[in-house]
Image 1 (cartoon, rainbow, N blue to C red):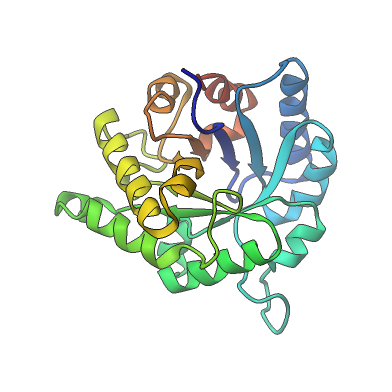
Image 2 (image 1 turned 180 degrees about the vertical axis):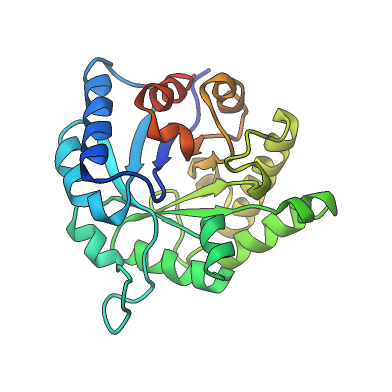
Length: 254
C-alpha cells in the first residue's frame, strides 16, 4: 500500500561548518542524489546562515531543497543580528525551521513567538517546519501529551495547511543523546498530533500534512521509525553532517 504522504528528510546542520565544509557536504549529497532515480523522499538541508547562499548554489537543480534554521517574525527593521523570512526567500530557501527546542530553551522562545515566526514564513510562501516536544522532566511527570497538545495549539500559524507547514516532534531529552522513545511511544505522539491537526484544520488536510520525528534518528533506527503510520520523515541533527549517514536515513523510507 503506498504511503499517504511523501516522506521529508530534513537536515538541521545547526552551528556547524565553515564555508568549505558546507559546500563539500552539499556536493556529496548532490552526487548521491544524482545516482538515485525517482527517490521515495523529499530532502532539504538547513545550513547555518553564513553558508546558505553557497550551499544553495551547490545544490541548485539537484532536487535537494534549501532551508534555514530560524527567522525573525518581522520583515525588516531594527533587529540586529536577526534574519527575516523575506531575506531567506531571496536566497532561495523553501523551508524554515521555527521553534526548535534549542531556540525555545536557549533563547526563551514561547509558543507565541514561534507562531509569529511561522506566520512570517507562511506569508512569504515558504514552508515552516514547526518544532514541538517535551523535556525529560515533563516526560517523567507524565505530561508528554499535554505539553505536545499545548505547544501545537500555540505554535501553528493561522493559515496552516499541508502546503505550508510541516510539524516536527522532537522529544528534547532524545536530541543528540542517542536515546529514543520506543516505536509505540513515537507513534502515540504522532497520532495525537494528527488528531489535533484534524481538529484544527479538518481531517482531509490533516491527513496530507507531514509530521516528522526528530530526536537521535540514525541509520540503524531510521527504518523502524519511518515505517510508523504517522511518521512522515525526520528532522535530522548530528547524522545530517555526514553525507552517507544522512543518505542512509533517507534511503530507509519505504
